[in-house]
Length: 337
Image (cartoon, rainbow, N blue to C red):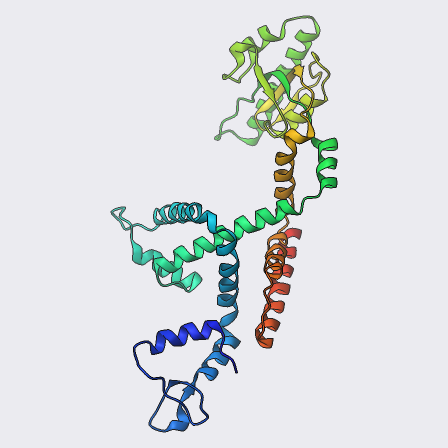
């Protein structure tokens, strides 16, 4: 049986420097020989053992490395930077009592969880992870359709708006009882409603912001937040602000995690042209696609397939198919939880 690259590399390491490789009685190369020739262990026997129990994970890594290191040959410097940054970050968690980096502790963890015994192996794993993330992201972007882009633009893209706000925060403390916290919430809501009542009577928004707002970053500017777009503010605030007509304020306090807001919409702009925001829409749609935990698995399957990859060994091909199916089931279960 033709030996695959995985076992070839392994055997190379075992017999390097040993000169001529001995043959068994059946003509196969020996990995281990004994005085009794019939007890010898052949390369084929070793390969079949490894193939059955250990090979698949290493094979997938080897496949992806072959594909991605060639595909992203221009990203080597970025990959190295990523690996160095990740390694530096990880080292901060493995220190002795004096705060000094403890490599033995890190290696013990890597050995336990990943079967890795050297820092170089860990760096190789990090590098492959970088390239996989890059490939999956690119795949997600490449599969965004013009129809999806147009739909997102029509339904989700909006122009910038500007607003002012008055924030009334409940005066709560961690050591308060639930009843005390509830009372503080009620007091904040009552104050917010009083502010709206004053606005209804004609008092100026800027003056009330300076007097009542708990947002120290802008109260002296009349609560001015400047221009912003979707995603810049907490969802409840953003939704209420966009619903307002120009120069109108909310007639009911808007509750967020920060407290109660009275919002005045002060400006609005036309949304950007499609060609100007197309790239950002593609990025957004790609992010949404990748939020599905099955996406990365399916993406790598397609990337391998598109490279012309075919597992010639029937047993390993079957293992690969089963592995992917199990990964998808786990990912789907995670999506549902």
